[in-house]
Image (cartoon, rainbow, N blue to C red; front, side):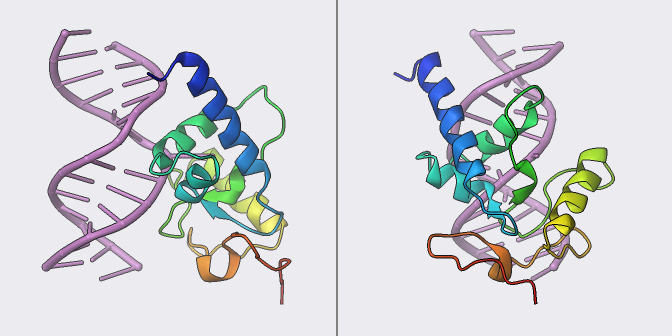
Length: 115
DNA sequence: AGGGTGACGGGCC
DNA sequence: GGGCCCGCCACCC
């Protein structure tokens, strides 16, 4: 049986996984779930990024949907924030879309190439 | 206790 | 690419 303690540790692993995404790269919610050892729990990843105020810095803006889109509601402050943060590290965002083939982080990913 | 929700994703069409 | 459906599950009434 999963205890509340287990879920706390899982959330911790999720945050750790997010911190591993290199600057200039992105990962999908599902990717993070896998890295955190909870395949199939992408939804939980999104959930754990919802209430992160008052916590250690987390590059939450590097996590996007498997469709290559920013998952936040378009037009929300957080959406704008995510676009800005990504642009700031060289990730091209077009109409909320990011080229996963180019920016997705996975084992063996080379250093970010910004043209 | 039960039902709705959503920062998800994969399969299908 | 887009839309639908369904599985998923922590949260919030």
